[in-house]
Image 1 (cartoon, rainbow, N blue to C red):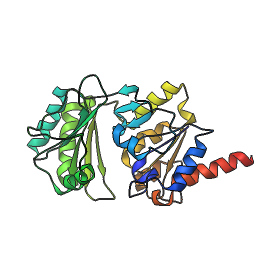
Image 2 (image 1 turned 180 degrees about the vertical axis):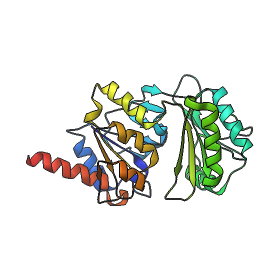
Image 3 (image 1 turned 60 degrees about the horizontal axis):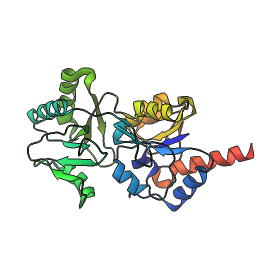
Length: 277
């Protein structure tokens, strides 16, 4: 069982899957089960991974959603509107406006991405990747939805750290609050999730669905949101470009980066080793 993060782990920095990684993935999928654990949405993940064979549930939006390749919801961990609006109101008191990602209605997995009027430089950069995206909606009054998958703030550490601390104190175990560096683009992002809406709990959901033990999973990652998954899986693998704190928690650090097809090289080498055994 193999589960990989996407951005800066399996995907190249230009958000493509190299021909080599595509070939190795699909060859490996003939004999093993492969899937992904990503902060990206169902819609975008399907777009990016269209050429790959995926037979197991995908962990999406940091773990808030676990969905089979056919679109069946295995697990949904959302914040309700009351909790979501309270989080947003606290952020506004700090002068920070969020992105809100949630489900557009009550009976489907159709996503909406709400963006605020007031955008900082980090948010403007993020939105460049969502041009002409039908999920994008202007959030005039900074309000959340009935089912919120995650609320995300981007900015400088000095601004986000006090907000993160305030939210942890006020909401305690009712939310998962992650403050992480965006090593590749600068700045930090603060992600607010349901307490079971992270990759660690989502890994448990996938294991239960497949009736497999967590010790059977090998996971790949590069960033803070991968650490919970690292702690639960049988084997945790960091790519060469991973954050130092992620490498420190990995069972293995690869000699290759995401742009050097680190995950695919690992899979290919493992396949050769098993074949020669």
